[in-house]
Image: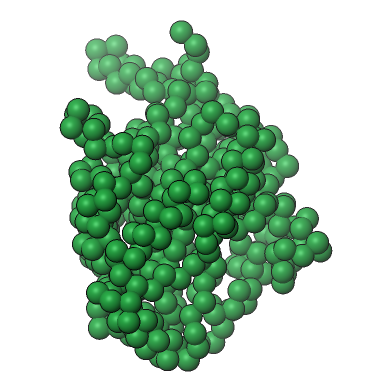
Length: 406
């Protein structure tokens, strides 16, 4: 990193990411003039969105995914025909877009509940190679019985209320499984030492077999021998991220995440959530490690608050009901949003993941209005200062757990 780039990364700078989901997070977003629903299942559509985010010097994008069609119901499919249904695979989108970008991180969503950690470790390691060190993953769980039926390997009981005492055991099991899933993925990334490949034509040795390691993971949910078939990724450990709303998922952040997304609705909520996440991090024995806590917000950005509110009301009318979200919904100008981000950051958040209500409208508002506003306040970088996603977030490249100490 150059001295100029290093100077451009003071501690008071915020980190910014955007969460990409179809045409946007509002269910009527596809009906907006800038939404491009006809291009939604093309590589060019996603490449354009990520290029716009990179124009804004953002740290990374996340890409939503799932194991069933989108639904207006939390647990069941619906029969609606007036909202976007269908997705491309998030990991494959990221791999397609990676060669078209240079700096921005790519963090696809993976569902731990019905997929295998061996496959995902290989896929994200491959993405890290394709992107030359800019890969991550967002791990999530699913408790939808209809999604379990796609696979036929297990049943999942309905969880009507994630916070109820009756569901606590199943919710805990699903997140414990996710924690073990990430542990397997991380060990597989380390199962090749960095210099395991020799590639010496003269001696005919391509690989040093002593530097490939069995991980021999035996847990409640997985039994994985290893090693991986993919050499250790360029970052050593690509970024692991997760969204969390309550104590059990906060525990997952504390145990396994590099970045956690949380959903405070005010400054007091942010302060309380950060304190709980830090307590879980300490309980997991990771107090000395960097764990970023990002606040999630849905954003409607316009030149005036009135214009943003009018746009939201128009979209609500098209959807037939007011839009609600697990995250705070911000409606206003870039300057007003910058004020809010600074207020929330003062309570311990180290960054933000913004969910554009309409991707074609609100993502450019983030990159072209919000970012310059934060730069004027000296709260955001003016150039990319690292070549890897871990570097952008101030995370060191970790040592390989299986390599012999020198």
